[in-house]
Image 1 (cartoon, rainbow, N blue to C red):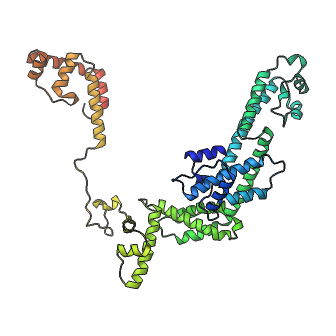
Image 2: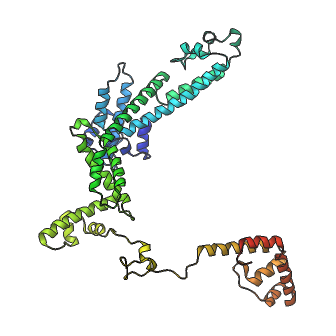
Image 3: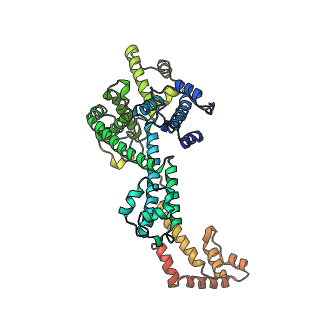
Length: 450
């Protein structure tokens, strides 16, 4: 628990992942008051903490203090006590999933070291039948390194001195470390993992049973949203996600029927799914909610005044600012496909005579640009195999590397030779470039040019 508190304070984990601070049953002020009177080293509230987030931190600290207090109890904790604490502090199910993952990881680590321990025993000739009465519950006992204990499980007296006691102690130390990582003893670690595994299996069975019993409710609600732009199967899937969330959050002690509680979550799931997936251009869900509110207010105004309201009037009716009203009403609702704008694909039913279809005639084809680049690289690679003078003549003569093409006379002045000598060097260089080995590389890069 201390590590989870540290994660929340460091900002790596949000408090909503561990405590249900947004539920109506979460009483923030009551929890803060209790934490201040119970926890002496409680972190002071900062200016950036909201009531809910700081109360969630206090709930997490109270739950950690309650768990620490139960370790000193000799009597077994009753399930009703745990349930009351969880409901009072609104501890999220994800917190127990993290506990279960921690214990499962520690149990796997413990079992891996246990297998190493048993392998050492088998290598020494000790059978599992002889080891079983002395093993379970005493895996990390210190007397395993004593000669009398080894002889009790079947080690011969003459083999005691040669027994690998160092490996045995090292494996036992690793087993203790695995149990300590979950703040449990080896016996309690195995028992906790067994109990958690059985509880998770039972929880999964009951959750699936509750979900399957309310699938028709999802279908009924999804059919009412069939005109939202998504297929019925997609709406049902989004509603199922909301139903699963409702099963996890349902509290029977509040006195409500499950179907009454689940309807809100199912509608919420379908609404969010429609906002996320129903449009080609995603519009944030809060903008859609504002727009629906504005449309309802506009319909009421139109029914009473027989005209459409202005943006300022909508702002007065709904309480939103004029800027927010303008942003919500300008959200894109309809879209045009590029295929529909193509003159070649127009039909008599879809004649967009007022829409012009533009194409950039000057745009460079990416494929041709890539092939030209590969061809230039191949030519430069072949020219680089020539000697320095030939390479310079070819580069200047044909303008390779982005430079302008030079005349024979300009090249001769640069090299300090005659115009004729430059032509001879050029002919010799071109002859070398026509060698089959160089031509093969250039043809591979420029099959359409050579």
